[in-house]
Image (cartoon, rainbow, N blue to C red; front, side):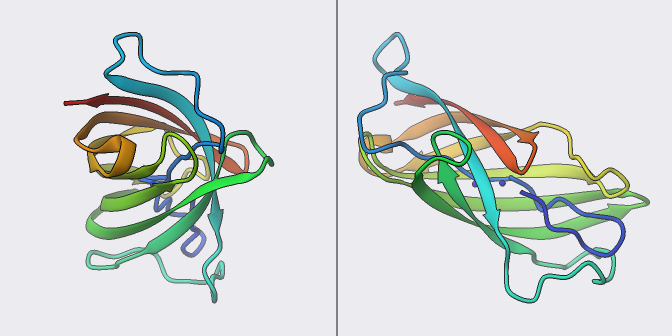
Length: 169
């Protein structure tokens, strides 16, 4: 489940890399045509961690940024879920930072449950707006038991737009 944390003047996106998405209390109407999965869009907004500031040093291999998002069906709407994400900086080359991130998305309402996702994503620290990227869905609980698929994460102002494409085995 992922917004961005700024680290120093470079601005590293720790990603909506697994930032997430959830459902409103009413059942979602955007089920996949085959009845075997879900397609839906939600919005994630990062909950700033305590002590975050703009004067932190640039990222280095071995750093472990973590973050959490509140999840919404629409921008500024009611909160419908949350996520938690842990990343590890695994490579730094100039302005390019590779981060391996894993996270869990908790979805309220129906359908409901949790979705596990992960990604190895490269961020350009010289760009305040990261590029869109995909997260692999690796499993889930509840209505998302045996979930597979991907989540397309796209920066969208103060939010990350999360387009879910989930199949069930």
